[in-house]
Length: 309
Image (cartoon, rainbow, N blue to C red; front, side):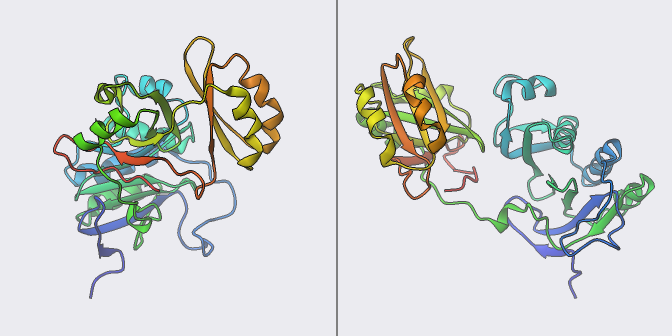
């Protein structure tokens, strides 16, 4: 009979994975959500050492960053000692850097990602301050070490942050045909390079020239170009309702954007004062329909990013 903490998985997890929830608290006495009342101040160093123990017993010395988000990308990469652009989906970092990312997530310092050694190991940090590890083998030495550190390594069926539990949408690859089409379509290119962050670009006549500056595995959405009739754009704000994203070219020629809800509408004329051109993009999922969506593939032409819709 298969033990309850072993099961067949995909999405970068080991095919026959052993999952443990690592926390300070004995699982006895938790509520049905796995939570426990009282002070939950994390024993940070112990959690990092426990993750390291599972990784090393699995033969892992580097981790792949998956599905990343960050509040301040520049500050994060600097704090991790990574080069500019070194934090993105698919970036491979040494185990020591991966542990620093775990530390950042435990401290809730504005970053979150999944860390994986595909088919061998993963670790996820929960919003409940629990750390989840999955390994291809049972790792008895790491379990013992975790207990020595004063933590509990509780066998569980799945990590609640397993990407297989929320399958990604299948997107087209931003291949040669995409760039040829984009050169003819023009407009605006929205580059989503982190889960919570996007950058905007004007599409030049030769759109392929944009690609070199884009983050690996970025989700790309193509929108109509900016409208030079800024008063007309402002007059149409009420047509959208709810959250909108204002994108505009300022007096100096730079592209800017800001998310706004209905309470921000009165401030929009001042925000776009001096703008050369602008566009309002609906925030509602069913109304936010780009001209085309694609994802930057890896060098072999395969799309591996796990972007939602």
